[in-house]
Figure 1 (tube, rainbow, N blue to C red):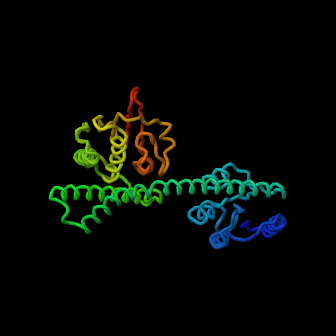
Figure 2: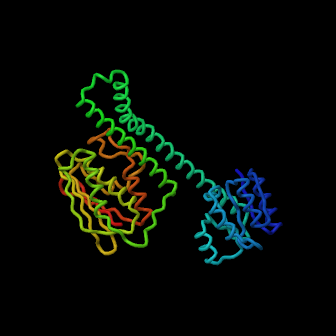
Figure 3: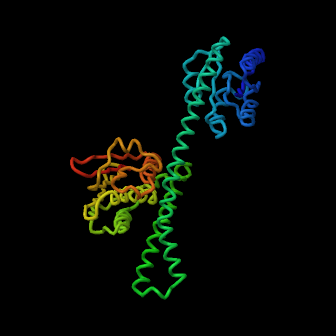
Length: 354
Protein backbone atom coordinates (compact mmCIF):
# COMPACT_ATOMS: atom_id res chain seq x y z
CA UNK A 1 0.00 0.00 0.00
CA UNK A 2 1.31 3.42 -0.99
CA UNK A 3 0.76 6.49 1.21
CA UNK A 4 1.46 10.08 0.20
CA UNK A 5 2.25 12.57 3.00
CA UNK A 6 1.82 16.27 2.21
CA UNK A 7 3.32 18.20 5.13
CA UNK A 8 5.47 21.36 5.20
CA UNK A 9 7.00 20.61 8.65
CA UNK A 10 10.10 18.58 7.77
CA UNK A 11 10.47 17.09 11.29
CA UNK A 12 6.85 15.90 11.38
CA UNK A 13 7.02 14.71 7.78
CA UNK A 14 10.13 12.62 8.43
CA UNK A 15 8.60 11.25 11.64
CA UNK A 16 5.43 10.18 9.81
CA UNK A 17 7.51 8.63 7.05
CA UNK A 18 9.53 6.56 9.55
CA UNK A 19 6.35 5.25 11.21
CA UNK A 20 4.87 4.29 7.84
CA UNK A 21 8.01 2.58 6.55
CA UNK A 22 8.33 0.51 9.74
CA UNK A 23 4.66 -0.46 9.39
CA UNK A 24 5.39 -1.81 5.91
CA UNK A 25 3.91 0.97 3.77
CA UNK A 26 5.44 2.36 0.62
CA UNK A 27 5.79 6.12 1.08
CA UNK A 28 5.84 9.28 -1.03
CA UNK A 29 6.51 12.73 0.47
CA UNK A 30 5.75 16.31 -0.51
CA UNK A 31 6.62 19.52 1.33
CA UNK A 32 4.12 21.79 -0.43
CA UNK A 33 0.52 21.55 -1.56
CA UNK A 34 1.25 22.05 -5.25
CA UNK A 35 3.98 19.39 -5.17
CA UNK A 36 1.67 17.01 -3.31
CA UNK A 37 -1.13 17.47 -5.85
CA UNK A 38 1.28 16.69 -8.69
CA UNK A 39 2.58 13.56 -6.92
CA UNK A 40 -0.95 12.41 -6.12
CA UNK A 41 -1.84 12.44 -9.83
CA UNK A 42 1.45 10.84 -10.87
CA UNK A 43 1.93 8.19 -8.16
CA UNK A 44 -1.74 7.30 -7.52
CA UNK A 45 -1.36 6.59 -3.76
CA UNK A 46 -3.82 4.39 -1.86
CA UNK A 47 -4.20 7.05 0.85
CA UNK A 48 -3.14 10.66 1.40
CA UNK A 49 -2.12 12.33 4.68
CA UNK A 50 -2.75 16.02 4.10
CA UNK A 51 -1.73 18.90 6.37
CA UNK A 52 -4.20 21.79 6.47
CA UNK A 53 -1.98 24.75 7.36
CA UNK A 54 0.64 25.11 4.62
CA UNK A 55 2.02 28.16 2.80
CA UNK A 56 0.77 28.73 -0.72
CA UNK A 57 -1.75 26.05 -1.58
CA UNK A 58 -3.21 24.94 1.75
CA UNK A 59 -4.75 21.58 2.55
CA UNK A 60 -8.30 22.64 1.65
CA UNK A 61 -7.13 23.87 -1.77
CA UNK A 62 -5.30 20.60 -2.40
CA UNK A 63 -8.34 18.56 -1.33
CA UNK A 64 -10.62 20.53 -3.64
CA UNK A 65 -8.34 19.82 -6.60
CA UNK A 66 -7.98 16.15 -5.64
CA UNK A 67 -11.75 15.68 -5.69
CA UNK A 68 -12.00 17.35 -9.10
CA UNK A 69 -9.67 14.80 -10.76
CA UNK A 70 -11.19 11.41 -11.53
CA UNK A 71 -7.86 9.69 -10.69
CA UNK A 72 -8.02 10.91 -7.08
CA UNK A 73 -11.74 11.60 -6.59
CA UNK A 74 -12.18 8.53 -4.38
CA UNK A 75 -8.72 8.33 -2.80
CA UNK A 76 -9.03 8.36 1.03
CA UNK A 77 -7.71 11.61 2.51
CA UNK A 78 -6.88 12.05 6.20
CA UNK A 79 -6.38 15.71 7.07
CA UNK A 80 -3.73 16.55 9.63
CA UNK A 81 -4.35 19.63 11.73
CA UNK A 82 -3.19 21.37 14.87
CA UNK A 83 -6.49 23.18 15.07
CA UNK A 84 -9.54 21.85 16.87
CA UNK A 85 -11.95 24.28 15.24
CA UNK A 86 -15.25 22.79 14.17
CA UNK A 87 -15.07 24.97 11.08
CA UNK A 88 -12.03 23.05 9.90
CA UNK A 89 -13.83 19.75 10.29
CA UNK A 90 -16.96 21.04 8.58
CA UNK A 91 -15.06 22.64 5.69
CA UNK A 92 -12.95 19.54 5.21
CA UNK A 93 -15.90 17.16 5.24
CA UNK A 94 -17.79 19.34 2.76
CA UNK A 95 -14.82 19.14 0.40
CA UNK A 96 -14.65 15.35 0.75
CA UNK A 97 -12.16 14.61 3.55
CA UNK A 98 -12.49 11.09 4.95
CA UNK A 99 -11.05 11.68 8.41
CA UNK A 100 -9.09 14.09 10.62
CA UNK A 101 -6.17 13.52 12.97
CA UNK A 102 -5.10 16.25 15.38
CA UNK A 103 -1.45 17.06 16.14
CA UNK A 104 0.23 15.89 18.25
CA UNK A 105 -0.78 12.27 17.70
CA UNK A 106 0.77 8.95 18.69
CA UNK A 107 2.08 6.23 16.43
CA UNK A 108 -0.93 4.03 17.25
CA UNK A 109 -3.42 6.83 16.57
CA UNK A 110 -1.89 7.45 13.16
CA UNK A 111 -1.75 3.78 12.14
CA UNK A 112 -5.28 3.09 13.41
CA UNK A 113 -6.66 6.01 11.38
CA UNK A 114 -4.84 4.79 8.27
CA UNK A 115 -5.85 1.14 8.70
CA UNK A 116 -9.48 2.13 9.29
CA UNK A 117 -9.64 4.16 6.06
CA UNK A 118 -7.81 1.55 4.00
CA UNK A 119 -10.16 -1.16 5.32
CA UNK A 120 -13.17 0.92 4.29
CA UNK A 121 -11.63 1.51 0.88
CA UNK A 122 -11.04 -2.23 0.46
CA UNK A 123 -14.63 -2.99 1.49
CA UNK A 124 -15.97 -0.34 -0.88
CA UNK A 125 -13.89 -1.75 -3.75
CA UNK A 126 -15.19 -5.26 -3.02
CA UNK A 127 -18.78 -4.02 -3.01
CA UNK A 128 -18.18 -2.10 -6.25
CA UNK A 129 -16.54 -5.10 -7.93
CA UNK A 130 -19.41 -7.35 -6.84
CA UNK A 131 -21.94 -4.88 -8.23
CA UNK A 132 -20.03 -4.68 -11.51
CA UNK A 133 -19.87 -8.48 -11.78
CA UNK A 134 -23.59 -8.79 -11.07
CA UNK A 135 -24.41 -6.14 -13.66
CA UNK A 136 -22.16 -7.83 -16.22
CA UNK A 137 -23.88 -11.16 -15.59
CA UNK A 138 -27.29 -9.54 -16.03
CA UNK A 139 -26.07 -7.99 -19.30
CA UNK A 140 -24.86 -11.39 -20.51
CA UNK A 141 -28.23 -12.92 -19.68
CA UNK A 142 -30.25 -10.09 -21.20
CA UNK A 143 -28.52 -8.61 -24.23
CA UNK A 144 -28.08 -11.80 -26.29
CA UNK A 145 -31.80 -12.58 -26.15
CA UNK A 146 -32.88 -8.99 -26.76
CA UNK A 147 -30.56 -8.65 -29.76
CA UNK A 148 -31.14 -12.08 -31.23
CA UNK A 149 -34.93 -11.89 -31.27
CA UNK A 150 -35.20 -9.07 -33.85
CA UNK A 151 -32.01 -10.18 -35.62
CA UNK A 152 -33.39 -13.69 -36.14
CA UNK A 153 -36.44 -12.19 -37.84
CA UNK A 154 -34.31 -10.00 -40.08
CA UNK A 155 -31.89 -12.80 -40.99
CA UNK A 156 -34.66 -15.33 -41.55
CA UNK A 157 -36.57 -13.18 -44.02
CA UNK A 158 -33.33 -12.03 -45.62
CA UNK A 159 -32.25 -15.61 -46.24
CA UNK A 160 -35.61 -16.56 -47.74
CA UNK A 161 -35.73 -13.53 -50.01
CA UNK A 162 -32.14 -14.09 -51.16
CA UNK A 163 -32.52 -17.82 -51.83
CA UNK A 164 -36.00 -17.97 -53.38
CA UNK A 165 -37.61 -14.56 -53.95
CA UNK A 166 -40.25 -15.99 -56.31
CA UNK A 167 -41.80 -18.16 -53.60
CA UNK A 168 -43.53 -15.12 -52.07
CA UNK A 169 -46.87 -13.87 -53.23
CA UNK A 170 -47.60 -10.15 -53.17
CA UNK A 171 -49.52 -10.45 -49.90
CA UNK A 172 -46.73 -12.52 -48.37
CA UNK A 173 -44.17 -9.90 -49.40
CA UNK A 174 -46.25 -7.19 -47.76
CA UNK A 175 -46.50 -9.28 -44.60
CA UNK A 176 -42.77 -10.01 -44.66
CA UNK A 177 -42.01 -6.33 -45.14
CA UNK A 178 -44.09 -5.43 -42.08
CA UNK A 179 -42.33 -8.07 -39.99
CA UNK A 180 -38.90 -6.89 -41.16
CA UNK A 181 -39.80 -3.29 -40.36
CA UNK A 182 -41.13 -4.30 -36.94
CA UNK A 183 -37.92 -6.20 -36.15
CA UNK A 184 -35.79 -3.26 -37.31
CA UNK A 185 -37.77 -0.86 -35.12
CA UNK A 186 -37.35 -3.13 -32.10
CA UNK A 187 -33.62 -3.42 -32.70
CA UNK A 188 -33.26 0.34 -33.21
CA UNK A 189 -35.19 1.09 -30.01
CA UNK A 190 -33.03 -1.35 -28.08
CA UNK A 191 -29.81 0.25 -29.32
CA UNK A 192 -31.10 3.77 -28.63
CA UNK A 193 -32.08 2.82 -25.08
CA UNK A 194 -28.69 1.26 -24.35
CA UNK A 195 -26.96 4.38 -25.67
CA UNK A 196 -29.21 6.63 -23.56
CA UNK A 197 -28.53 4.55 -20.46
CA UNK A 198 -24.76 4.84 -20.97
CA UNK A 199 -25.16 8.58 -21.54
CA UNK A 200 -27.07 8.90 -18.26
CA UNK A 201 -24.56 6.74 -16.38
CA UNK A 202 -21.67 8.89 -17.60
CA UNK A 203 -23.67 12.09 -16.98
CA UNK A 204 -23.16 13.29 -20.53
CA UNK A 205 -26.69 14.58 -21.06
CA UNK A 206 -27.82 18.18 -20.86
CA UNK A 207 -31.31 18.24 -19.34
CA UNK A 208 -31.49 21.91 -18.38
CA UNK A 209 -34.93 23.46 -18.55
CA UNK A 210 -35.49 25.91 -21.37
CA UNK A 211 -36.19 29.56 -20.59
CA UNK A 212 -39.74 29.63 -21.93
CA UNK A 213 -42.41 26.89 -21.65
CA UNK A 214 -43.65 25.38 -24.90
CA UNK A 215 -46.81 23.37 -25.69
CA UNK A 216 -46.42 19.58 -25.37
CA UNK A 217 -49.99 18.26 -25.72
CA UNK A 218 -49.61 17.11 -29.33
CA UNK A 219 -46.22 15.47 -28.69
CA UNK A 220 -47.49 13.56 -25.63
CA UNK A 221 -50.56 12.40 -27.52
CA UNK A 222 -48.46 11.22 -30.45
CA UNK A 223 -46.13 9.33 -28.11
CA UNK A 224 -49.03 7.60 -26.32
CA UNK A 225 -50.53 6.36 -29.59
CA UNK A 226 -47.08 5.35 -30.88
CA UNK A 227 -46.48 3.07 -27.86
CA UNK A 228 -50.02 1.63 -28.02
CA UNK A 229 -49.51 0.87 -31.71
CA UNK A 230 -46.21 -0.83 -30.87
CA UNK A 231 -48.26 -3.49 -29.07
CA UNK A 232 -51.15 -3.37 -31.58
CA UNK A 233 -53.40 -2.11 -28.78
CA UNK A 234 -54.74 1.25 -29.91
CA UNK A 235 -58.22 0.22 -28.74
CA UNK A 236 -56.88 -0.32 -25.19
CA UNK A 237 -55.50 3.22 -24.83
CA UNK A 238 -57.48 5.81 -22.89
CA UNK A 239 -55.97 9.24 -23.44
CA UNK A 240 -56.88 12.42 -21.58
CA UNK A 241 -54.95 15.65 -21.23
CA UNK A 242 -55.22 19.41 -21.23
CA UNK A 243 -53.33 21.88 -23.39
CA UNK A 244 -50.23 21.89 -21.17
CA UNK A 245 -46.79 23.44 -21.59
CA UNK A 246 -43.39 22.50 -20.17
CA UNK A 247 -39.86 23.83 -19.88
CA UNK A 248 -38.34 20.35 -19.87
CA UNK A 249 -36.37 19.18 -22.93
CA UNK A 250 -38.94 17.47 -25.14
CA UNK A 251 -36.71 14.43 -25.73
CA UNK A 252 -36.51 13.80 -21.97
CA UNK A 253 -40.25 14.18 -21.47
CA UNK A 254 -41.08 11.82 -24.32
CA UNK A 255 -38.54 9.26 -23.10
CA UNK A 256 -40.17 9.21 -19.66
CA UNK A 257 -43.58 8.66 -21.24
CA UNK A 258 -42.24 6.00 -23.61
CA UNK A 259 -40.64 3.92 -20.85
CA UNK A 260 -43.63 4.09 -18.48
CA UNK A 261 -46.25 3.49 -21.17
CA UNK A 262 -44.21 0.63 -22.62
CA UNK A 263 -44.17 -1.09 -19.22
CA UNK A 264 -47.91 -0.52 -18.82
CA UNK A 265 -48.69 -2.22 -22.13
CA UNK A 266 -46.04 -4.90 -21.75
CA UNK A 267 -47.32 -6.03 -18.35
CA UNK A 268 -51.04 -5.98 -19.05
CA UNK A 269 -53.28 -8.17 -21.14
CA UNK A 270 -54.72 -7.35 -24.55
CA UNK A 271 -58.17 -5.93 -23.95
CA UNK A 272 -57.24 -4.34 -20.60
CA UNK A 273 -57.33 -0.55 -20.61
CA UNK A 274 -54.17 1.52 -20.19
CA UNK A 275 -54.88 5.13 -19.21
CA UNK A 276 -52.57 8.06 -19.87
CA UNK A 277 -53.56 11.42 -18.39
CA UNK A 278 -51.66 14.64 -17.79
CA UNK A 279 -52.25 18.10 -16.41
CA UNK A 280 -50.48 20.96 -14.64
CA UNK A 281 -50.64 21.22 -10.84
CA UNK A 282 -48.93 24.36 -9.57
CA UNK A 283 -45.50 24.48 -11.17
CA UNK A 284 -45.44 20.74 -11.94
CA UNK A 285 -46.45 18.87 -15.04
CA UNK A 286 -48.16 15.72 -13.74
CA UNK A 287 -48.21 12.53 -15.83
CA UNK A 288 -50.37 9.63 -14.69
CA UNK A 289 -50.37 6.14 -16.18
CA UNK A 290 -52.73 3.41 -15.00
CA UNK A 291 -52.76 -0.24 -16.03
CA UNK A 292 -54.46 -3.47 -14.96
CA UNK A 293 -51.39 -5.69 -14.95
CA UNK A 294 -49.88 -7.73 -12.10
CA UNK A 295 -49.01 -4.59 -10.14
CA UNK A 296 -45.79 -2.90 -9.10
CA UNK A 297 -44.94 -1.90 -5.53
CA UNK A 298 -42.84 0.83 -3.92
CA UNK A 299 -40.56 -1.90 -2.56
CA UNK A 300 -39.92 -3.18 -6.07
CA UNK A 301 -39.18 0.34 -7.30
CA UNK A 302 -36.59 0.76 -4.53
CA UNK A 303 -34.82 -2.33 -5.90
CA UNK A 304 -34.73 -1.11 -9.51
CA UNK A 305 -31.31 -1.70 -11.03
CA UNK A 306 -29.98 -1.93 -14.60
CA UNK A 307 -31.00 -5.17 -16.36
CA UNK A 308 -33.08 -6.36 -13.39
CA UNK A 309 -36.50 -7.62 -14.46
CA UNK A 310 -39.69 -7.74 -12.42
CA UNK A 311 -42.89 -9.75 -12.83
CA UNK A 312 -40.97 -12.56 -14.50
CA UNK A 313 -43.91 -14.92 -14.23
CA UNK A 314 -45.96 -12.61 -16.41
CA UNK A 315 -43.61 -12.24 -19.40
CA UNK A 316 -40.26 -13.70 -18.48
CA UNK A 317 -38.49 -13.22 -21.81
CA UNK A 318 -39.54 -9.70 -22.73
CA UNK A 319 -37.68 -6.49 -22.05
CA UNK A 320 -34.12 -5.56 -21.14
CA UNK A 321 -34.75 -4.42 -17.57
CA UNK A 322 -33.52 -0.94 -18.50
CA UNK A 323 -36.77 1.04 -18.63
CA UNK A 324 -37.20 1.92 -14.97
CA UNK A 325 -33.47 2.50 -14.52
CA UNK A 326 -33.65 5.10 -17.29
CA UNK A 327 -36.72 6.66 -15.63
CA UNK A 328 -34.94 6.83 -12.26
CA UNK A 329 -31.86 8.50 -13.68
CA UNK A 330 -33.83 10.99 -15.77
CA UNK A 331 -35.93 12.01 -12.77
CA UNK A 332 -32.82 12.34 -10.60
CA UNK A 333 -31.21 14.66 -13.14
CA UNK A 334 -34.24 16.99 -13.24
CA UNK A 335 -35.34 16.72 -9.58
CA UNK A 336 -38.54 14.98 -10.63
CA UNK A 337 -40.63 12.63 -8.50
CA UNK A 338 -42.32 9.32 -9.14
CA UNK A 339 -45.21 8.07 -7.02
CA UNK A 340 -46.46 4.49 -7.09
CA UNK A 341 -50.09 4.06 -6.11
CA UNK A 342 -51.01 0.36 -5.76
CA UNK A 343 -54.62 -0.45 -6.55
CA UNK A 344 -56.82 -2.57 -4.33
CA UNK A 345 -57.37 -4.91 -7.23
CA UNK A 346 -54.94 -5.77 -10.01
CA UNK A 347 -52.90 -2.96 -11.54
CA UNK A 348 -50.81 0.08 -10.72
CA UNK A 349 -51.03 3.85 -11.00
CA UNK A 350 -47.75 5.61 -11.75
CA UNK A 351 -47.69 9.38 -11.17
CA UNK A 352 -44.75 11.50 -12.27
CA UNK A 353 -44.23 15.13 -11.25
CA UNK A 354 -41.70 17.10 -13.29
